[in-house]
Each structure stands twice: as structure tokens, then as C-alpha cells.
Length: 191
Image (cartoon, rainbow, N blue to C red; front, side):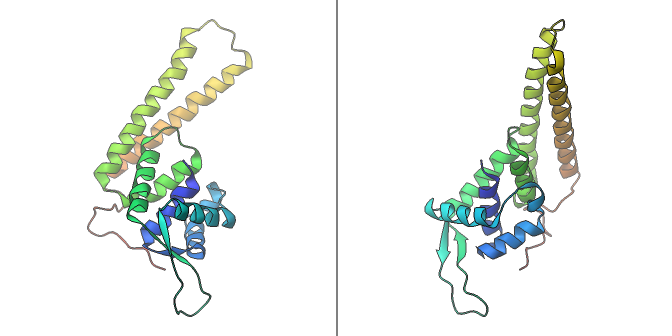
């Protein structure tokens, strides 16, 4: 799954309609340049690809002040695809950092209970994956892992950190933190 695809489609779905420059401004305001390595070119490439895939439609620029910009709106299939991408990202423990960060950024577009369910699935997958690696190490206690033991230690500590974060965000959501899609007072995006 591409973080760029999720981010660009999500920005359009969240706003209802957006042009490339607005999407870039949104991504910058979300700090995506720090973790996503998403350039202007990749935004426009994603827009062309999403349009070709039928996920968005281009609206002809109308009479307005300023430069004419093609605005994009999600199709019903695009809105469904966004939700599917988002849910797969939140539930999976196999996402790269950029995709995970994109999923976190859009998790508030889903109902609280749904996000908690997805993150619990992620947590179970994280525990299973950690156990597979650590069980292999435990089955060979006398093996000379040489310097490769550092890879196992790295994996163990990374897995533990991911599990701790997931447990923490689930607890925070259960405690009512963060304005979610089904909350009564949820702030709307402004231009």
C-alpha cells in the first residue's frame, strides 16, 4: 500500500474536493514532509493514477479569482477505497512508517469503536509476529548467532515499542481521547 495514495485520496475525501496545491498544503500542515518523503511530483502522479483508476474525478476550473486549478472530488468507489486502505493500514502490523503515519492521520475519520477494533487486530498481529521471531531464537539457545544476535535484539525492541504504542493508543481512545467521526463535536477542516 502506498502512503502517497492514502494521503492524497484521504485529503480529497476529507475535504470533499481539492486541487493539487491544496493537497500539498494539507500534507505540509500534517508534517508529512518529515516522514513521508512525498514530493510535489508524487502528488500529481497519485492524482493522475487515482483519476485513471476511477477513484476521483476532475472538475473543470470555474470562474474564480487566482490561478485556474483543476479540482478533484472522490467518486463513491474512491471514498470506499479510501476507507478500505485506511482500515487495512490500521489493522496491519506490516505497514511501513509512512503508511502507518498516514493511517494515524486519518483514523479520526472513522468511528471510535471501529478504530479500536482495527487496532486490536493490529495488536494481535504484532504479538504473533514478535512470537515467531523470538520463538525461533528460543528454540536454538546454544546457537552461535555471532553478530546477528543484534538483529534479533533490534527486532525484539522494535516489536515491543510497536506493541506498547498500539496498547497505549487503544487505551487513550477507550478513555475518550481524540475527536472521532462519531463524536458530536468534531472540528471540520478549513481552507
